[in-house]
Amino acid sequence: MKKTISFISVLLISQIAFGLNNLTHSNDTTITAKTDTVKANQHKKTTKIRLGRLFNVDIVNDGSDIVVHRSHRKEHYSDYTNISNNGTEKVYGRERYRKFYPHWSGICLGVNNYTGKNFEAMPQGSEYLQLNTNKSMEFSLNLWQVGIPIVKHRLGIVTGVGFNWNNYRFRNTEVRLHSDSTILYHSINPTDQTVKSKLTVCYLKVPLLLELQIPVSSSNKLYISAGVEGELKINSHTKIKTSDKNKHKDWNDFHLNTFTLKPMVRLGCGEFGIYGSYNLIPLFDKNAAPELYNYSIGVTFNF
Image (tube, rainbow, N blue to C red; front, side, top):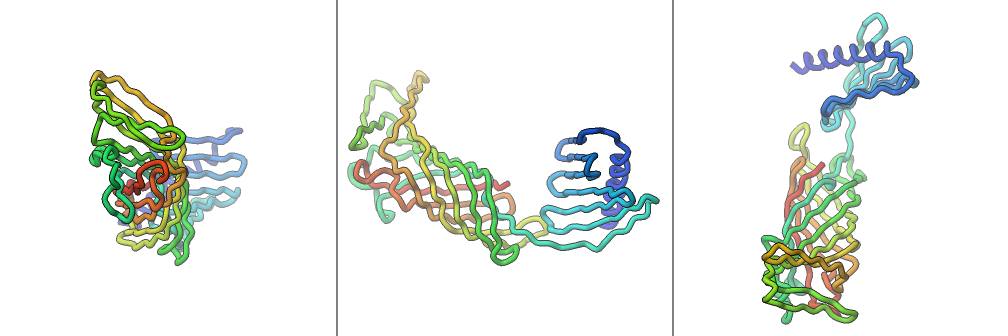
């Protein structure tokens, strides 16, 4: 069956190659259909084909022969087919290669909360900051990643760049946070009939993780990674929503610390996983607000 599929693939590619060879355009030609793309460069006499999410195909016409190079992006192999002008095909042996593909870029969705120092109860006087945990959500968008292999395709260092949003939904919906040059304080006004009160913080983040990968199938790997994520605060605001659907946002610093340092563990298989993190640096400046350490747990969708 695999030989039949390979033969049909080569036959199809050869027909595309000869067809593109007869095109006479001065510029590059690109054809896209859903996830498949064909791009022909008339000057370099090359054609690049992307077949869905799995295959890359390069076709080179040197004037006498056409060489087809097909590579599978997940199963880590490539093969070559030489097609002469008289239609004779010669398939070279499959070439195995290994790459280290990290599992960090993607989307993370989780819940936040915080504790006192050393996982103790929240300090006295911080009751107004108690959270509705079910609605205190964390959202991360990890845009770019790079993997540095240590032991071939099994063990490597992972880093990248992403953004993180922490939403802290207060249990007491009538709480409003305020800050001046010295302390964080709050007010409560029952006459406002507020139905939601929350604090949102946005960070730029960079991870430094050690990832171990264990193949479980030809296209999926079990992975576990551990390390730290460092974050830089970009902005923060509170949001109040009243029963008559009026909303008010207050963009302020609220004595939040500028940096975070979070030990993190991630575990998953293929495109899905779970994670947990804990901040070693207090969420607020401990000289101006209660000393609280935030943590998060959630799920990941890798790409």
